[in-house]
Length: 347
Ligand code: NAD
Ligand code: UFG
Image 1 (cartoon, rainbow, N blue to C red):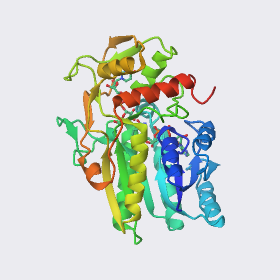
Image 2: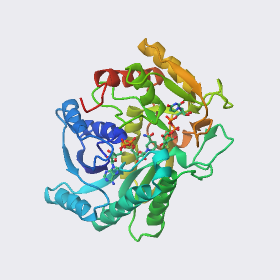
Image 3: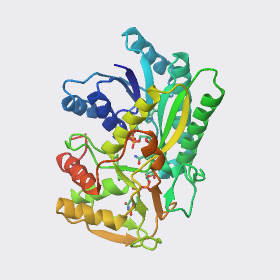
């Protein structure tokens, strides 16, 4: 079975994807600096995939190119040369990127360039890259497709566009044949149904779903709903929430799609195509989990937009994949994780 390098494999999306890959029998090399995660998650992955736990963790930072070289060398030495990469590692907070742009350019772009250099050095040219829906500019279209204008409004989004451009350059200009898939995620939420792994934000959650969960577990008093005057069904912001395991499975499909190709560069939206408002999500969470989420309507959050929903037709047509879980599954599984682990991986 092929060996896959998963950068950022200890993080939210990376850890769930590792589980899907392990279940399929892949041998994994996980590289993570744990700047925004805990390697405790690997213990949970081991428990969840008893038979198939073929994973080697190497703690380190992508900005350290000699560390990356050692990872590829080690894989070669133990006769498991890395055939492809799923590249999750990166900083991801929009607001933090506005405050610390240099940190974001350094971490996300320099880290990625190092990775691509070492991949080239070891003739490993198959990669699935984590991009984001936040790279799209403002549009009047209800559903955002891959042809919509790319015009990010913050440094985080700029780093994602830049990395996509570097990958495109490699595809167009490199003498060797690169196989590249950039997945533009919409809003990944929820947790693995076991309640063993899930999202574990450090500090106060920036995002809606973990905030709701922390209100439910009474770590936070109430939810601030940012904006109730958007042109949406109830005035609150609408997003396309995708179950984390559906997203994990999209990575598996993306990787296996690339295996069959010769040369490839593709960007795909990964979402459900269904929009849900903040208050709709609150209601579904309350009903599914029989709890109360107190909330207050507040001013709009700076930089927010009213509605972001994926046109996911291209991904459905190209990958042998479609999202299978609904909002009730998201709320049930997310709550299962939160109530089993009120303080995430720490306790
Ligand atoms: P996360 O923070 O949970 O995971 C990212 C992981 O990368 C963390 O474990 C972190 O420690 C690691 N990391 C960061 N910089 C590193 C470096 N230089 N070297 C080694 N490890 C490093 O985030 P996530 O939600 O799992 O997101 C994964 C990827 O998907 C990110 O690139 C993010 O930008 C992208 N993305 C996330 C969302 C979302 O809403 N979660 C949406 C769109 C795109
Ligand atoms: N919201 C609240 N209260 C909160 C947090 C969020 O009302 O405490 C609202 C927001 O205003 C928005 C909706 O909930 O209307 C969703 O907000 P999130 O912060 O959960 O998600 P965003 O769509 O703003 O951004 C997320 C990630 C980005 C990623 C983007 C992709 O944070 O990194 O999805 O679409 F790029």
